[in-house]
Image (cartoon, rainbow, N blue to C red):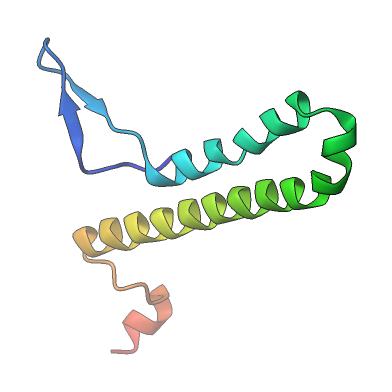
Length: 94
């Protein structure tokens, strides 16, 4: 899971994690599923492909956002450690 720098403070003084944007987008991908369950079959048939496409696009966008967030955190932690990302043998040649 990604680590978000912004957090809210509870009444006990403990820091609570905030909701990540990628998680919100992934959860929004399941909102069109409510339409699939609630719409009558006569209305649903022409809308089924667009609804499923929207669900897939939102889920894919959320997963891409998660990957970008994880890469950003990995780069930030590597920079904090002083690791420049080169393989060990490349550093020996310098």
